[in-house]
Image 1 (cartoon, rainbow, N blue to C red):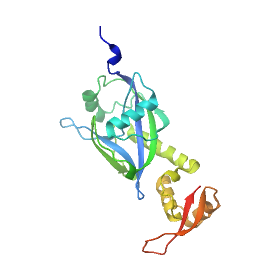
Image 2: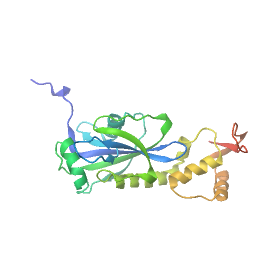
Image 3: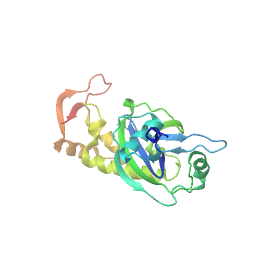
Image 4: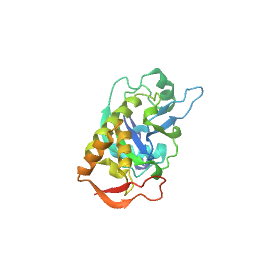
Length: 232
């Protein structure tokens, strides 16, 4: 008798998880993309890291596993933000050849549960694996045409990030322990995609209960040292 407990769980052909990982390198906001492994003359496409959910796992576990298997990133907090279930989301002609090669049921309707995360790029070093031929950090304002409906998913994640950024003080995770107001303003402008008035921004920050001015200034800079601040 076969010991079925030792068999690898099969993937559910109708449910997947996709991960939108935003990275910040103190200069630009970027998103992590995988290059779909090339087959024959198939045109290379980039996509968000994603794959089918296994029959025996939860959605959160699936998102973490998929990200690890495709990019070798782990230990990242992933926040579920939206579900995408358009019946035609995988039927574009640009995606069919790849699906026929890498999916047991390429015509199956797939509903994907999307997650997003925001990380310091210097802390993570992605490596391509599985059906990912390569992995890149791409600036969010230079995103090419992605596979499936991944442009739609990425844009929805960016909107959610902007909402959370304003109300949940995510900047605390991305800046050094001591920072200048210019650094804080630049981060807000990159994430929110808008130019902020310097005077109004600083006035608002100084009134905030989340930021404290330090009796310290920058060191080792080739310009007038700016005052340093920290988050509570």
